[in-house]
Length: 353
Image 1 (cartoon, rainbow, N blue to C red):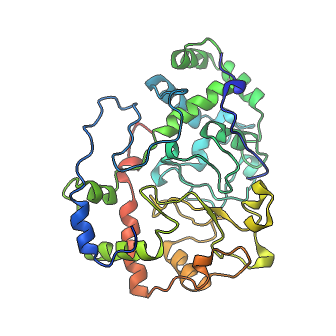
Image 2: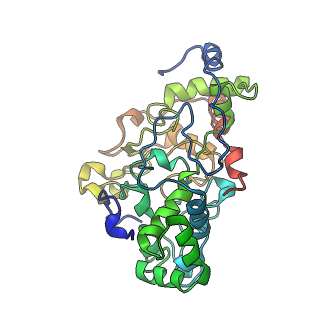
Image 3: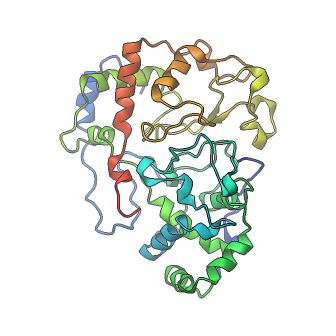
């Protein structure tokens, strides 16, 4: 039997609701020679690391993805019984059409229409992530559901009650048995099934990826190529690599010193982390509005306007933003054109999910 005690020990939960390129054309020529994706697997439920991605950090040896586990995880992801009053599921705040983000609310909304304090981020490429939540308060994917299930402003339920409700649903026991080979339902198995579903939410089929890998005869437009050069100059320091995040925590100047959200400081209990949040991936950024940790900005234009002239100073402000980011209106439009190439339409239309 696998219970919570058998899960990894890294759990940490606290109160948390290339250089710049001057020749874009040369960059494109180099990219188109990067080769093809490996031959596609015939198993739609096998996890495959994209050729241009870093190695995953999730331990698949302990919890390998199987078809039965994935399908159980998908059902649980959409299961309203995880919430106290049967009104909220994981999918309520993480919708496939918008890269598993929430397009309707600035911050998450749970049972009884209770509002949290954080924007619900998109869910993808989680196998390559070792810290979760905007403040990094959870250190393993399997433990992420605990926060949502037990939060009084999200699902407002206990793990014990959730397990009992699943046991009382006749076909769940058979589905857990098929997925894990044991005739029982535990919170640990619940977490592992949810992880198997989320691990396959891999975003690597955008136009950007096609250009990088030389697929589908893809090529950037002039605006997109100019936007790429601007991105490398102004953004890639934080939104780094093929995941488009360096995983760090930074204060991006949303608020003045006396208005700062505690942010990462809630976890580290260090004043130097006040106002800092994890740098989000920019993959699918055109789909995952609203933006910032509290969803205060609605459009990419507003985001760039913030960086162009709205950065507010405080002692924990990221030094790279001390003078903001200097962009003309035309450059901002080009940068957005590039960011739109990061939308993975194949992911949001994938019927597996």
